[in-house]
Length: 333
Image 1 (cartoon, helix red, strand yellow):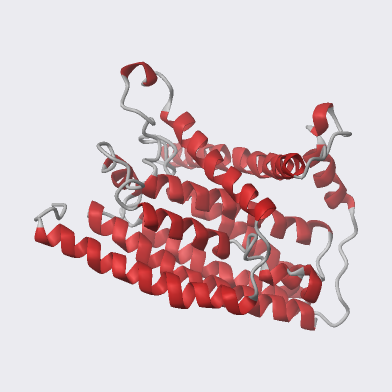
Image 2 (image 1 turned 180 degrees about the vertical axis):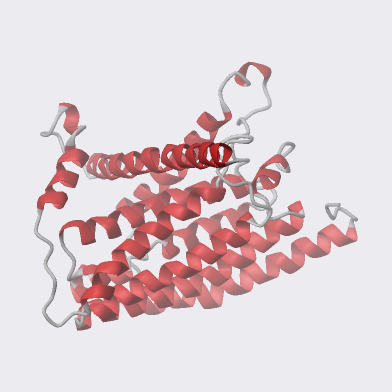
């Protein structure tokens, strides 16, 4: 019995490491890809000194942050100040437990996977708020308030959009959501929802053009202005891990997850995880493209878009889709 328990724990740890290590590597090289793509869009070279074509730049940046001295503000609440980036980074990792990369390749295939993601994303606000408050800096606190208001505002529309998808599927399990898209991806009948969901993900992850919590012009650097060394690195890693997570959600909910792009027999040899990765990279490229192309919103424009545009539209889509499914008796069994 004890031997079986040890074997089970060992297998779970191997699976966890199999998710965390590739994720951290993906985050590191996503930063490099962002700098390279934005440099190309702005007609410059980007990182090109450390390694061939700058490929080792993320390793150099990570090593620099590891050896720097952490600075603790004299008037800060030290324990909360230190724990805030740890909380943010931890939540960005544990959310991946229910994300399926291929059929059966998932750490925990929960029947309430969507609710699990909701719970984790709701807790993410606490890392930001505690970081801003514990710094005892007015700029950090204003950035934290902005970020919390922004995340809560756009979680409402994200929730309603996901409810629309769940009505079509009849399950909160991610694997069943993907398998329900064998005939047609939900991006086709629910294309406006995909656009609203992606824009809401930009706001949820504090990315441009919704990076108001980190507005350099008025808030210096937002809620993490007092952080340095590994504290800043953990916030940085958490933000980019959340970007990849949101891109994965877009893929699972609207682009058929690991299902191939076309139901053509000679494409079936390509593993589902490769299709999943290609679709996630497509959304990540769009994240970078939006940052390079669009100016930052004003804060009142940000809130107006969330509460006066996305909220009524997403609610209207819930009513419309549920009405169509009931009228034509298309409700999933």
